[in-house]
Length: 271
Length: 284
Image (cartoon, rainbow over all chains, first blue to last red; front, side):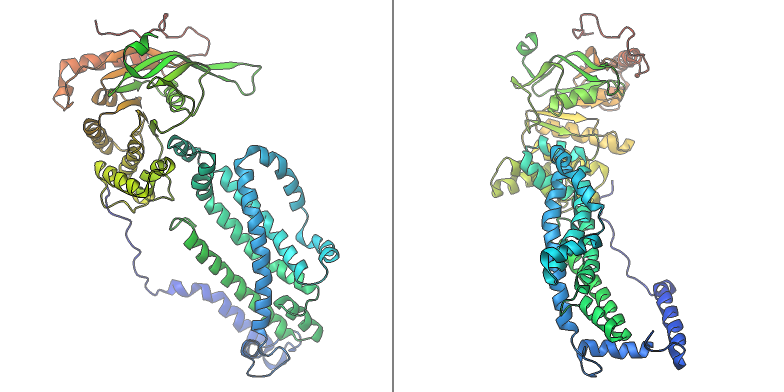
């Protein structure tokens, strides 16, 4: 009988394999430099890596005064992050309980599931005109779009998670004296956690996509607004910097979500 | 009513179970037919039968996970109406909660029953010791071997002081050596704190090593073919297992199992059930 715990991972050694993920980005960068050097491609179509690096620095820290966007990253990032956080929390607050309920209570599923899937078939972008009519141009519309887009993956995954909680766990819990409510809180909830978490991650990713959609409609601040404004001003470097900023924030928010869930969720290695 | 008079803690009376055939025209499959059994307090009884004979269904009904079509189950003179911790179940598959540590798995039932924190800590500690898992309290089930998991599963039900213990082929997933070790371990625990146990198995040797009484089941419909008392001395060492008495009972059981024939019988041919369906005994 094996009485020892699982051995720790061996310390990582540097190998050639570790550099493989950087190969493609390096090739792209090289090709890009080649295309823009000596004005082969004009700056108004594609700025050179160097221009972009300077613009990025300036957008973040504002020390170079290259444009009206100098040092404005933090203001826009904050505005966008607030919208994403609000929309995402809304979708999670509605999606997780509804999904878990649909996955564990058959009658509830019969009542709501078909309708939800019908609405899901409407692409998120199709809601934009109606959202503008309802909420006007600005934050409310953006938050609405994010919450709507995030709801579906959260609902679908949570329902799937609850539906596939192993029946033997439920039997064991009932045998040990659980009632309907404690069965839900102590078995169905933790048992469906892996899928709930993947639903939340997908939704958070989508949130950033719908953020840009909402902000394109003309709000004064936010990274989506920056991109749209820069297009009108013909500043391609700012457009690209805005895109990169969203990529960074998207990745950071995913890490943050995983960190918070890791503290909340009961078990290592479960998420 | 004779069963109740015999001082049985766990009584199954005239129990039948049939399922409707899902797509048929109102067809039914009889899974269990007029099953009677009686496990006395502190007795370790085995339910032996070929796979598919309905022994798991019977155990699920006793545990309260399923309802019988007719007949009833009495534990401590109370009729079983649903699952509860007066009947602890050790399942064949790993049924521990993977998101809880060994400690919290064992304490799960105590928390549900509303015990105080101190009480839970004390009891859980005692039962972790009983099953020999000191030092593993904070481990998660997936960090344990199959045998250790089943020990936790055993502690998790014993800690609630159940009236009866129902074990559904709990060691079948273990390798031969671990299974032997767990059988001895179960007997140790049973010796230390006498429990009424109904143990399901399809393994003649396992039944013979463990039990004082063996109910042999047959399939389609499942019913008790015979009730065989095992009056071999304990501990059932290799020497005991080499005695003529052991072989006599084993021969008897193997013959019965052959008669019980593993589920190949067409549905509506004569059943092997004893005509009066009263468990017959081979002890004169």
